[in-house]
Length: 457
Image (cartoon, rainbow, N blue to C red; front, side, top):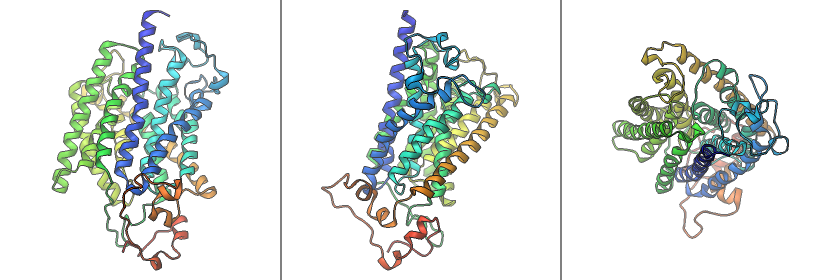
């Protein structure tokens, strides 16, 4: 193994470890934005989801995503655990098995691990959106199907040499492959679950349910920002100094711009700068630049970030008005800005800016060709993932159920699902509810019937 392969491998593995570290960031963000009575549940979901993703992607997902086959899914090397040649050979040695990755000169195991941590990220996104009312076992089963079947098929379309790649779509590090997939899957689950009890009154008024620990949420956001310096530049899968340096700067610039624009937007909209919006603004900028980070200039990344920060604030408000209850803003961050980031390639791309031939985007004289390819990717991925995820969620709802009982939701999932609490030495405040008002409505909620006229006392 020559020096370049060794250096490339070290870089890819370090980047993958940074992406793995993002699991901590997601756990802290989601826990901080949720109520104290559900902290154990969210921490447990975020810890277990990577283990589930690891096995699902190892068993079948990697082969479906990168195995040679047709333009829809891979058909070779499907069962990576036993069916792949696991020798330390690199590159073209896997032509005819995983040739979609033959451009990267690192060992197959390094390629697998780097792609695995991305799959885990897609599943983690779902956790926050369905928080505080999802059954633990149902979330685990869904995550397994997402990372073993749904995510890999989309990944094959774009990163595995499939039909969207052949159609000229570009997604450098996953605004669509990772973030939009997680967002569409989350949206399907949120719609079937319905809002948390007490979130909306019978008259349609929105009742704020603040998170219990913004310190954790801030810590988590900073961990995610840090981890993104592996997420985006690591997707070079080679220690290319110029490309990595450019991607780090575009990534950071978009995040910084989005932090400021989201803060200003919330200040103007609510009268005061909202920390939650500031944090989600930074994440929105990171998601939005993920597809374009290697294809746009630093100046363009600034504009992308500024737009993303405003977009996430407007989106959070819009989802709430539509009665789509997302406790952490995952849909606004990952779905909405995943879509925007994908389209941003078609607007802002400059051909060969890091040595990749993308053609120019609409705003740089390239016409509408690239933008149309990006839009086709957004629409087709959205239609497939939402439909497939809705089918899985609906099947789970009809079999094992997906929502906890009303009593369990009110008392907290920590006690009901796990039998312990995150803060056992502290007295937690729990709202008082009229038992007569709750009588007979739990079965209606499980069936998805809107609960009208029931509100906290």
